Length: 232
Image 1 (cartoon, rainbow, N blue to C red):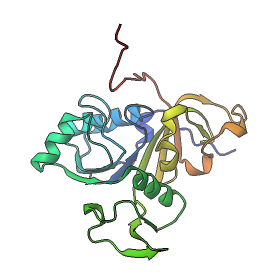
Image 2: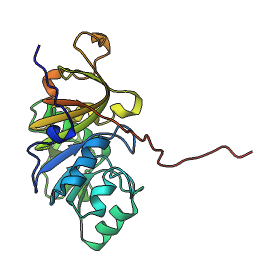
Image 3: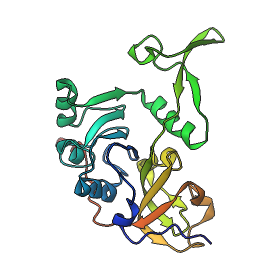
Image 4: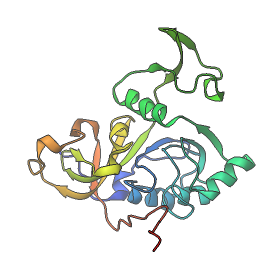
């Protein structure tokens, strides 16, 4: 059995350089690769293009990299919870490519499956369609969207084994699954790392063939973006 395990996050991020394009999984603050983001911050890599559904909040998730001006361009579908993201976008400091959420997921999945491009009706008739090929399918106009091209994909799983097989939990499955294998190198950090054979094969969401490096993460915060309580 081939082992994909690396000793720590430092080894996991070997080869990350300025100017690279990175995918980062998760949904809101759920299932984000916290350890990998922290290491990116420590390394102070610059001019990054980051593909992620959103950019966390001001002091957590990708918001940490934004505050240090490490990100040159964000490709995402949601800005709402990060004031610094909004400020940089409106001031022109940050290049932003806003993508419909389903299209964002499908561009990841296309890269994962070796599909160079696909047609979708999402975004036709809006700024999203500017400069893109349009084709009619059954009387409905679609635009051509290309698969993403990324150097690294950083994902976070609930459980994984040393062969790279991964299980995601709940909402954390959003974007982590489709980003696995969608870049040249996929790095998975897991809450619990086990030996091959310990995971139920029927529960595995991503097979190890899509993962190049896996390591045991720690100190997960599991924050809540918008805490709401019932009024008495």
